[in-house]
Image (spheres, rainbow, N blue to C red):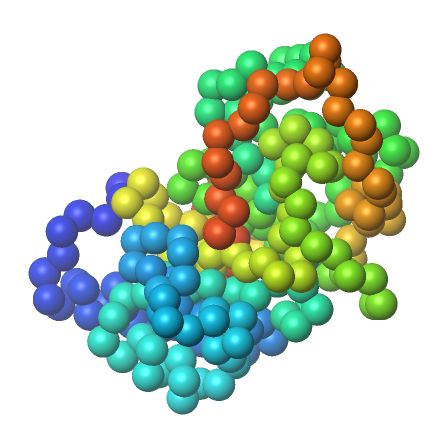
Length: 231
């Protein structure tokens, strides 16, 4: 099972070492990282600004993970050179009319790509403990992409400037973040860039879908080649 059981001292130490490796690998890949609460998805060091302390410095990572099994957060946006499309599951919520029969953000994003005459290129992908997916992309130069929630489509959120994701290899009480597709990070498709930056449409109360429960606003999920899911 991916859900962590109570660990003895030896296993706790190994768990911490693996999380340190996840942080170090992300940093070597060019991403700025910081500690996230053990078994959680919020920044761990409450008295510090996570965006300011995020680093690629191996010495700083060694200090943080020396004694505590922090999960790993990665800054999104221009600093790390990535943006992330966060695809959620419906968690049993009924879809809006335009998404009839759909239950996952990937279904929605695939439909939107077809409607735009675009594609979804293979890219680095992470699965979350609740079967969500994070698609990693390289943003175009000179464009500031902010975090969004539901703007592109139902069950489709994004993380860009001012956001972060939780790295693969991180663990929550309900499971683990896995690398699902360990391929190079693709360029953000033009149609998706246009959908991300388009002015939001006016909501129609007659056709609006049901309100969504809180999503992983804090979380984003990043890459760790040590743990690759076959799904």
